[in-house]
Image 1 (cartoon, protein in one colour):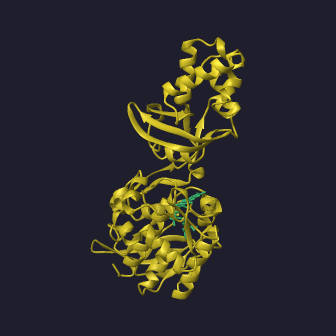
Image 2: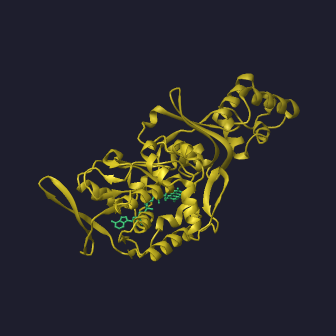
Image 3: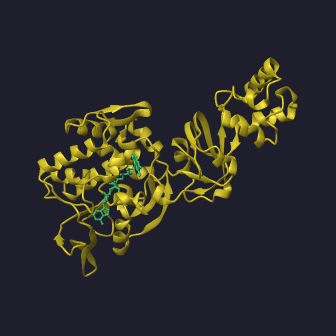
Length: 402
Ligand SMILES: Cc1cc2nc3c(=O)[nH]c(=O)nc-3n(C[C@H](O)[C@H](O)[C@H](O)COP(=O)(O)OP(=O)(O)OC[C@H]3O[C@@H](n4cnc5c(N)ncnc54)[C@H](O)[C@@H]3O)c2cc1C
Protein backbone atom coordinates (compact mmCIF):
# COMPACT_ATOMS: atom_id res chain seq x y z
CA UNK A 1 0.00 0.00 0.00
CA UNK A 2 2.83 2.39 0.81
CA UNK A 3 4.60 1.49 -2.43
CA UNK A 4 1.38 2.12 -4.38
CA UNK A 5 0.83 5.51 -2.74
CA UNK A 6 4.45 6.59 -3.23
CA UNK A 7 4.45 5.54 -6.91
CA UNK A 8 1.11 7.25 -7.57
CA UNK A 9 2.25 10.43 -5.78
CA UNK A 10 5.28 10.43 -8.07
CA UNK A 11 2.97 10.39 -11.07
CA UNK A 12 2.79 6.72 -12.06
CA UNK A 13 -0.34 4.88 -13.08
CA UNK A 14 -0.60 2.18 -10.41
CA UNK A 15 -2.47 -1.10 -10.12
CA UNK A 16 -2.38 -2.85 -6.75
CA UNK A 17 -2.99 -6.60 -6.91
CA UNK A 18 -3.99 -8.24 -3.63
CA UNK A 19 -4.84 -11.91 -3.37
CA UNK A 20 -7.18 -11.47 -0.40
CA UNK A 21 -10.72 -10.17 -0.42
CA UNK A 22 -9.53 -7.09 1.48
CA UNK A 23 -6.38 -5.07 2.05
CA UNK A 24 -4.12 -5.16 5.11
CA UNK A 25 -5.07 -8.50 6.65
CA UNK A 26 -1.75 -8.80 8.48
CA UNK A 27 -1.75 -5.14 9.40
CA UNK A 28 -5.12 -5.77 11.07
CA UNK A 29 -3.60 -8.17 13.63
CA UNK A 30 -0.45 -6.17 14.35
CA UNK A 31 0.16 -4.82 17.84
CA UNK A 32 -2.77 -6.93 19.11
CA UNK A 33 -5.07 -5.04 16.77
CA UNK A 34 -3.66 -1.63 17.79
CA UNK A 35 -0.93 -1.61 15.10
CA UNK A 36 2.44 -0.49 16.37
CA UNK A 37 3.17 1.40 13.13
CA UNK A 38 6.68 2.59 13.85
CA UNK A 39 9.09 3.55 16.60
CA UNK A 40 10.03 7.14 17.33
CA UNK A 41 13.68 6.46 18.19
CA UNK A 42 16.22 8.66 16.38
CA UNK A 43 17.31 7.07 13.07
CA UNK A 44 20.77 6.21 14.43
CA UNK A 45 19.15 4.08 17.17
CA UNK A 46 16.72 2.44 14.76
CA UNK A 47 19.36 0.25 13.20
CA UNK A 48 20.41 -1.04 16.66
CA UNK A 49 17.01 -2.71 16.80
CA UNK A 50 17.64 -4.56 13.55
CA UNK A 51 19.75 -7.64 14.37
CA UNK A 52 19.81 -8.79 10.78
CA UNK A 53 21.15 -6.71 7.85
CA UNK A 54 20.68 -3.26 9.43
CA UNK A 55 22.96 -1.47 6.96
CA UNK A 56 20.72 -2.36 4.04
CA UNK A 57 18.16 0.07 5.50
CA UNK A 58 20.34 3.16 5.51
CA UNK A 59 18.79 4.78 2.40
CA UNK A 60 15.24 3.67 3.15
CA UNK A 61 15.38 5.17 6.65
CA UNK A 62 16.68 8.47 5.37
CA UNK A 63 13.99 8.53 2.67
CA UNK A 64 11.21 7.81 5.17
CA UNK A 65 12.17 8.19 8.84
CA UNK A 66 9.82 7.34 11.71
CA UNK A 67 9.11 11.08 12.08
CA UNK A 68 8.24 11.28 8.36
CA UNK A 69 5.86 8.33 8.65
CA UNK A 70 4.18 9.81 11.71
CA UNK A 71 3.68 13.11 9.88
CA UNK A 72 2.34 11.32 6.80
CA UNK A 73 -0.20 9.25 8.73
CA UNK A 74 -1.33 12.32 10.66
CA UNK A 75 -1.75 14.32 7.45
CA UNK A 76 -3.80 11.42 6.06
CA UNK A 77 -6.29 11.71 8.93
CA UNK A 78 -4.75 8.99 11.10
CA UNK A 79 -3.11 10.85 14.01
CA UNK A 80 -0.62 8.83 16.03
CA UNK A 81 0.62 8.72 19.62
CA UNK A 82 3.90 7.63 21.18
CA UNK A 83 3.86 5.14 24.03
CA UNK A 84 6.41 3.48 26.34
CA UNK A 85 9.57 2.44 24.50
CA UNK A 86 8.83 5.06 21.78
CA UNK A 87 6.28 2.71 20.22
CA UNK A 88 3.93 4.57 17.89
CA UNK A 89 0.24 3.67 17.53
CA UNK A 90 -2.73 5.30 15.81
CA UNK A 91 -4.52 7.46 18.39
CA UNK A 92 -7.70 5.50 17.71
CA UNK A 93 -5.78 2.33 18.71
CA UNK A 94 -7.30 0.62 15.69
CA UNK A 95 -5.11 -1.05 13.09
CA UNK A 96 -8.00 -0.82 10.66
CA UNK A 97 -7.68 2.98 10.73
CA UNK A 98 -4.16 2.68 9.32
CA UNK A 99 -5.43 0.57 6.43
CA UNK A 100 -8.29 3.03 5.92
CA UNK A 101 -5.83 5.94 5.73
CA UNK A 102 -3.95 4.11 2.96
CA UNK A 103 -7.20 3.25 1.18
CA UNK A 104 -8.25 6.91 1.20
CA UNK A 105 -4.89 7.99 -0.19
CA UNK A 106 -5.01 5.38 -2.92
CA UNK A 107 -8.51 6.43 -3.85
CA UNK A 108 -7.50 10.11 -4.02
CA UNK A 109 -4.49 9.24 -6.16
CA UNK A 110 -6.46 7.00 -8.50
CA UNK A 111 -4.69 3.74 -7.63
CA UNK A 112 -6.57 0.86 -9.22
CA UNK A 113 -6.95 -1.59 -6.31
CA UNK A 114 -7.86 -5.09 -7.48
CA UNK A 115 -8.79 -7.59 -4.77
CA UNK A 116 -8.92 -11.40 -5.11
CA UNK A 117 -6.11 -11.18 -7.65
CA UNK A 118 -3.33 -13.62 -6.86
CA UNK A 119 -0.20 -13.06 -8.90
CA UNK A 120 1.02 -16.30 -10.42
CA UNK A 121 4.03 -15.14 -12.40
CA UNK A 122 6.06 -12.20 -13.51
CA UNK A 123 6.75 -12.39 -17.22
CA UNK A 124 10.06 -11.24 -18.65
CA UNK A 125 11.64 -11.27 -22.08
CA UNK A 126 15.24 -12.09 -22.73
CA UNK A 127 16.64 -10.36 -25.79
CA UNK A 128 20.30 -10.81 -26.58
CA UNK A 129 21.15 -11.45 -22.95
CA UNK A 130 19.28 -8.46 -21.56
CA UNK A 131 16.22 -9.25 -19.49
CA UNK A 132 13.25 -6.91 -19.54
CA UNK A 133 10.01 -6.90 -17.64
CA UNK A 134 6.85 -7.60 -19.62
CA UNK A 135 3.77 -8.26 -17.55
CA UNK A 136 2.20 -9.82 -14.49
CA UNK A 137 0.07 -12.92 -14.86
CA UNK A 138 -2.71 -13.49 -12.33
CA UNK A 139 -4.15 -16.80 -11.19
CA UNK A 140 -7.31 -16.24 -13.19
CA UNK A 141 -5.28 -15.87 -16.35
CA UNK A 142 -5.23 -12.11 -16.74
CA UNK A 143 -2.06 -10.70 -18.27
CA UNK A 144 -1.34 -7.19 -17.01
CA UNK A 145 1.44 -5.39 -18.93
CA UNK A 146 3.77 -3.37 -16.70
CA UNK A 147 6.81 -1.11 -17.05
CA UNK A 148 7.68 -1.78 -13.43
CA UNK A 149 6.57 -4.31 -10.81
CA UNK A 150 6.92 -3.94 -7.05
CA UNK A 151 6.77 -7.22 -5.21
CA UNK A 152 5.67 -6.93 -1.54
CA UNK A 153 4.19 -10.32 -0.76
CA UNK A 154 5.52 -10.48 2.82
CA UNK A 155 7.20 -13.34 4.67
CA UNK A 156 5.91 -16.84 5.35
CA UNK A 157 4.43 -16.53 8.82
CA UNK A 158 0.74 -16.25 9.77
CA UNK A 159 -0.06 -17.60 6.32
CA UNK A 160 -3.80 -17.10 6.84
CA UNK A 161 -3.17 -13.38 6.28
CA UNK A 162 -2.01 -14.09 2.72
CA UNK A 163 1.74 -14.29 3.24
CA UNK A 164 2.28 -17.85 2.03
CA UNK A 165 5.63 -17.25 0.35
CA UNK A 166 4.39 -16.67 -3.21
CA UNK A 167 6.92 -13.89 -3.70
CA UNK A 168 9.76 -16.21 -2.72
CA UNK A 169 8.75 -18.66 -5.45
CA UNK A 170 8.27 -15.87 -8.02
CA UNK A 171 11.73 -14.45 -7.33
CA UNK A 172 13.38 -17.81 -7.31
CA UNK A 173 11.86 -18.62 -10.72
CA UNK A 174 13.33 -15.36 -11.97
CA UNK A 175 16.80 -16.51 -10.93
CA UNK A 176 17.18 -14.63 -7.65
CA UNK A 177 19.11 -15.97 -4.66
CA UNK A 178 16.73 -16.83 -1.84
CA UNK A 179 17.96 -17.62 1.68
CA UNK A 180 16.27 -20.28 3.83
CA UNK A 181 13.28 -18.92 5.72
CA UNK A 182 13.43 -19.23 9.50
CA UNK A 183 11.18 -18.11 12.33
CA UNK A 184 12.27 -14.92 14.13
CA UNK A 185 10.35 -13.21 16.92
CA UNK A 186 8.89 -16.55 17.82
CA UNK A 187 7.98 -18.30 21.08
CA UNK A 188 10.42 -20.96 22.29
CA UNK A 189 9.79 -24.60 23.13
CA UNK A 190 11.12 -26.13 26.37
CA UNK A 191 10.69 -29.83 27.09
CA UNK A 192 11.23 -29.73 30.88
CA UNK A 193 8.03 -30.54 32.79
CA UNK A 194 8.65 -27.77 35.33
CA UNK A 195 8.35 -25.18 32.53
CA UNK A 196 4.96 -26.39 31.27
CA UNK A 197 3.82 -26.79 34.90
CA UNK A 198 4.23 -23.01 35.21
CA UNK A 199 1.96 -22.31 32.20
CA UNK A 200 -0.02 -19.11 32.53
CA UNK A 201 2.57 -17.53 34.84
CA UNK A 202 3.62 -14.13 33.57
CA UNK A 203 6.69 -12.37 34.96
CA UNK A 204 7.39 -8.64 34.86
CA UNK A 205 10.70 -6.84 35.42
CA UNK A 206 12.87 -9.89 34.87
CA UNK A 207 16.07 -10.05 32.85
CA UNK A 208 16.57 -12.57 30.09
CA UNK A 209 20.10 -13.22 28.83
CA UNK A 210 21.21 -15.28 25.85
CA UNK A 211 24.87 -16.30 25.67
CA UNK A 212 27.13 -18.29 23.41
CA UNK A 213 30.10 -19.27 25.55
CA UNK A 214 31.22 -16.01 27.17
CA UNK A 215 29.60 -13.82 24.52
CA UNK A 216 26.32 -12.14 25.44
CA UNK A 217 24.11 -12.21 22.35
CA UNK A 218 21.09 -10.62 23.97
CA UNK A 219 20.15 -9.27 27.39
CA UNK A 220 17.17 -7.15 28.34
CA UNK A 221 14.66 -6.38 31.07
CA UNK A 222 10.96 -6.87 30.55
CA UNK A 223 8.11 -9.34 30.55
CA UNK A 224 7.82 -13.03 29.73
CA UNK A 225 5.28 -15.78 30.00
CA UNK A 226 5.32 -19.54 30.64
CA UNK A 227 3.09 -21.54 28.31
CA UNK A 228 2.08 -25.18 27.81
CA UNK A 229 4.87 -25.59 25.21
CA UNK A 230 7.58 -23.41 26.74
CA UNK A 231 8.05 -19.66 26.97
CA UNK A 232 6.77 -16.58 25.18
CA UNK A 233 6.22 -12.85 25.73
CA UNK A 234 8.14 -9.79 24.53
CA UNK A 235 11.53 -10.67 26.05
CA UNK A 236 11.42 -14.21 24.67
CA UNK A 237 10.42 -13.06 21.18
CA UNK A 238 13.33 -10.62 21.12
CA UNK A 239 15.80 -13.26 22.36
CA UNK A 240 14.55 -15.65 19.65
CA UNK A 241 15.73 -13.23 16.96
CA UNK A 242 19.29 -13.99 18.01
CA UNK A 243 18.67 -17.75 17.86
CA UNK A 244 17.45 -18.07 14.24
CA UNK A 245 19.93 -20.21 12.33
CA UNK A 246 22.09 -20.90 15.42
CA UNK A 247 22.84 -24.34 16.85
CA UNK A 248 20.78 -24.25 20.05
CA UNK A 249 23.24 -26.60 21.77
CA UNK A 250 25.79 -23.75 21.74
CA UNK A 251 23.43 -21.27 23.36
CA UNK A 252 22.35 -20.70 26.93
CA UNK A 253 19.25 -18.78 27.96
CA UNK A 254 19.03 -17.70 31.59
CA UNK A 255 16.48 -15.76 33.57
CA UNK A 256 17.35 -13.32 36.33
CA UNK A 257 14.32 -13.25 38.61
CA UNK A 258 15.68 -10.40 40.74
CA UNK A 259 17.57 -8.08 38.38
CA UNK A 260 17.39 -5.21 40.89
CA UNK A 261 19.56 -7.06 43.42
CA UNK A 262 23.17 -8.22 43.15
CA UNK A 263 24.05 -11.74 44.30
CA UNK A 264 25.42 -10.29 47.57
CA UNK A 265 22.30 -8.16 48.15
CA UNK A 266 20.09 -11.14 47.43
CA UNK A 267 22.00 -13.31 49.90
CA UNK A 268 21.73 -10.56 52.56
CA UNK A 269 18.01 -10.35 51.88
CA UNK A 270 17.60 -14.13 52.29
CA UNK A 271 19.61 -14.10 55.51
CA UNK A 272 17.49 -11.24 56.85
CA UNK A 273 14.24 -13.01 55.93
CA UNK A 274 15.46 -16.25 57.51
CA UNK A 275 16.54 -14.32 60.64
CA UNK A 276 13.09 -12.74 60.91
CA UNK A 277 10.93 -15.80 60.10
CA UNK A 278 13.19 -18.83 59.77
CA UNK A 279 10.55 -21.25 61.05
CA UNK A 280 8.43 -20.63 57.97
CA UNK A 281 8.59 -23.17 55.17
CA UNK A 282 11.29 -22.22 52.66
CA UNK A 283 8.71 -21.86 49.85
CA UNK A 284 6.54 -19.56 51.97
CA UNK A 285 9.56 -17.40 52.74
CA UNK A 286 10.49 -17.23 49.05
CA UNK A 287 7.01 -15.85 48.25
CA UNK A 288 8.44 -12.54 49.44
CA UNK A 289 10.84 -12.68 46.50
CA UNK A 290 8.79 -14.08 43.65
CA UNK A 291 5.32 -15.44 42.73
CA UNK A 292 4.12 -18.44 44.73
CA UNK A 293 4.39 -20.90 41.82
CA UNK A 294 8.03 -20.02 41.36
CA UNK A 295 8.61 -20.11 45.11
CA UNK A 296 7.54 -23.76 44.94
CA UNK A 297 9.54 -24.55 41.79
CA UNK A 298 12.88 -22.86 42.50
CA UNK A 299 13.84 -24.90 45.63
CA UNK A 300 13.02 -28.11 43.74
CA UNK A 301 15.34 -27.03 40.92
CA UNK A 302 18.12 -26.74 43.53
CA UNK A 303 17.27 -30.21 44.86
CA UNK A 304 15.72 -28.72 48.01
CA UNK A 305 12.50 -29.60 49.79
CA UNK A 306 10.57 -26.33 49.80
CA UNK A 307 8.49 -27.50 52.74
CA UNK A 308 11.33 -27.65 55.20
CA UNK A 309 11.83 -24.74 57.63
CA UNK A 310 13.88 -22.00 55.98
CA UNK A 311 16.30 -21.84 58.94
CA UNK A 312 17.36 -25.42 58.23
CA UNK A 313 18.98 -24.76 54.87
CA UNK A 314 22.76 -24.86 54.75
CA UNK A 315 25.02 -22.09 53.43
CA UNK A 316 25.60 -24.09 50.21
CA UNK A 317 21.86 -24.49 49.74
CA UNK A 318 21.34 -20.78 50.31
CA UNK A 319 24.03 -19.96 47.75
CA UNK A 320 22.45 -22.39 45.27
CA UNK A 321 19.13 -20.56 45.72
CA UNK A 322 20.83 -17.22 45.10
CA UNK A 323 22.61 -18.52 41.99
CA UNK A 324 19.46 -19.97 40.47
CA UNK A 325 17.42 -16.86 41.28
CA UNK A 326 19.98 -14.74 39.43
CA UNK A 327 20.49 -17.16 36.52
CA UNK A 328 17.71 -19.71 36.13
CA UNK A 329 18.62 -21.82 33.07
CA UNK A 330 15.73 -22.10 30.59
CA UNK A 331 16.18 -25.35 28.69
CA UNK A 332 15.16 -24.36 25.15
CA UNK A 333 14.66 -27.29 22.80
CA UNK A 334 13.65 -25.33 19.71
CA UNK A 335 11.67 -22.48 18.30
CA UNK A 336 7.96 -22.75 17.56
CA UNK A 337 7.24 -23.17 13.83
CA UNK A 338 7.53 -20.45 11.20
CA UNK A 339 3.75 -20.17 10.98
CA UNK A 340 3.71 -18.86 14.57
CA UNK A 341 6.56 -16.40 14.10
CA UNK A 342 5.89 -12.66 14.07
CA UNK A 343 8.60 -12.31 11.45
CA UNK A 344 10.27 -14.46 8.81
CA UNK A 345 14.08 -14.33 8.71
CA UNK A 346 15.58 -15.10 5.30
CA UNK A 347 13.94 -14.55 1.94
CA UNK A 348 15.52 -12.47 -0.77
CA UNK A 349 19.26 -12.04 -0.23
CA UNK A 350 19.74 -8.29 0.14
CA UNK A 351 22.81 -8.44 -2.11
CA UNK A 352 20.35 -9.02 -4.97
CA UNK A 353 18.78 -5.59 -4.43
CA UNK A 354 20.00 -2.01 -4.81
CA UNK A 355 19.31 -0.52 -1.35
CA UNK A 356 18.96 3.02 -2.71
CA UNK A 357 16.09 2.09 -5.05
CA UNK A 358 14.96 -1.44 -4.00
CA UNK A 359 15.39 -2.51 -7.61
CA UNK A 360 16.46 -6.07 -8.36
CA UNK A 361 20.04 -6.25 -9.64
CA UNK A 362 18.96 -9.06 -11.97
CA UNK A 363 15.80 -7.68 -13.54
CA UNK A 364 15.54 -3.96 -14.32
CA UNK A 365 12.09 -2.66 -13.44
CA UNK A 366 11.47 -5.25 -10.72
CA UNK A 367 11.40 -3.81 -7.19
CA UNK A 368 11.16 -5.68 -3.90
CA UNK A 369 10.07 -4.34 -0.51
CA UNK A 370 8.95 -5.43 2.95
CA UNK A 371 9.33 -8.70 4.75
CA UNK A 372 10.16 -10.58 1.57
CA UNK A 373 13.64 -9.07 1.97
CA UNK A 374 16.09 -10.75 4.33
CA UNK A 375 15.95 -7.95 6.91
CA UNK A 376 14.24 -8.23 10.26
CA UNK A 377 14.06 -6.29 13.47
CA UNK A 378 13.02 -6.63 17.10
CA UNK A 379 9.51 -5.81 18.32
CA UNK A 380 8.47 -2.19 18.79
CA UNK A 381 7.19 -1.04 15.39
CA UNK A 382 10.48 -1.58 13.59
CA UNK A 383 9.30 -4.31 11.24
CA UNK A 384 6.36 -2.33 9.93
CA UNK A 385 8.63 0.64 9.49
CA UNK A 386 10.97 -1.52 7.43
CA UNK A 387 8.01 -2.48 5.22
CA UNK A 388 6.77 1.13 4.94
CA UNK A 389 10.16 2.70 4.25
CA UNK A 390 11.35 0.10 1.72
CA UNK A 391 7.89 0.24 0.08
CA UNK A 392 8.15 4.02 -0.10
CA UNK A 393 11.56 3.90 -1.78
CA UNK A 394 10.44 1.14 -4.16
CA UNK A 395 7.32 3.10 -5.11
CA UNK A 396 9.18 6.32 -5.83
CA UNK A 397 11.95 4.53 -7.72
CA UNK A 398 9.55 2.46 -9.80
CA UNK A 399 7.81 5.69 -10.78
CA UNK A 400 11.15 7.14 -11.81
CA UNK A 401 11.22 9.72 -9.02
CA UNK A 402 14.50 8.70 -7.32
C1 LIG B 1 0.70 -11.29 14.94
C2 LIG B 1 1.64 -10.25 14.35
C3 LIG B 1 1.75 -9.02 14.97
C4 LIG B 1 2.65 -8.08 14.44
N1 LIG B 1 2.70 -6.86 15.06
C5 LIG B 1 3.56 -5.93 14.57
C6 LIG B 1 3.60 -4.62 15.13
O1 LIG B 1 2.78 -4.25 16.00
N2 LIG B 1 4.54 -3.75 14.66
C7 LIG B 1 5.41 -4.10 13.66
O2 LIG B 1 6.26 -3.28 13.29
N3 LIG B 1 5.35 -5.29 13.06
C8 LIG B 1 4.44 -6.21 13.48
N4 LIG B 1 4.35 -7.42 12.84
C9 LIG B 1 5.17 -7.67 11.62
C10 LIG B 1 4.54 -6.94 10.43
O3 LIG B 1 3.15 -7.19 10.39
C11 LIG B 1 5.17 -7.40 9.11
O4 LIG B 1 6.55 -7.28 9.18
C12 LIG B 1 4.64 -6.53 7.95
O5 LIG B 1 3.24 -6.67 7.85
C13 LIG B 1 5.31 -6.92 6.64
O6 LIG B 1 4.72 -6.14 5.63
P1 LIG B 1 4.73 -6.62 4.11
O7 LIG B 1 3.93 -5.60 3.37
O8 LIG B 1 6.07 -6.92 3.68
O9 LIG B 1 3.92 -8.00 4.12
P2 LIG B 1 2.41 -8.34 4.55
O10 LIG B 1 1.91 -7.37 5.53
O11 LIG B 1 2.43 -9.78 4.92
O12 LIG B 1 1.58 -8.12 3.20
C14 LIG B 1 1.78 -8.93 2.08
C15 LIG B 1 0.54 -8.87 1.23
O13 LIG B 1 0.79 -9.49 -0.02
C16 LIG B 1 -0.34 -10.28 -0.35
N5 LIG B 1 0.10 -11.34 -1.28
C17 LIG B 1 0.91 -12.39 -0.99
N6 LIG B 1 1.09 -13.15 -2.09
C18 LIG B 1 0.38 -12.56 -3.09
C19 LIG B 1 0.17 -12.88 -4.45
N7 LIG B 1 0.72 -13.95 -5.02
N8 LIG B 1 -0.63 -12.07 -5.19
C20 LIG B 1 -1.21 -10.97 -4.64
N9 LIG B 1 -1.06 -10.63 -3.36
C21 LIG B 1 -0.26 -11.41 -2.58
C22 LIG B 1 -0.82 -10.82 0.98
O14 LIG B 1 -2.15 -11.26 0.89
C23 LIG B 1 -0.63 -9.61 1.88
O15 LIG B 1 -1.76 -8.79 1.92
C24 LIG B 1 3.44 -8.38 13.31
C25 LIG B 1 3.30 -9.62 12.68
C26 LIG B 1 2.41 -10.55 13.19
C27 LIG B 1 2.26 -11.88 12.49
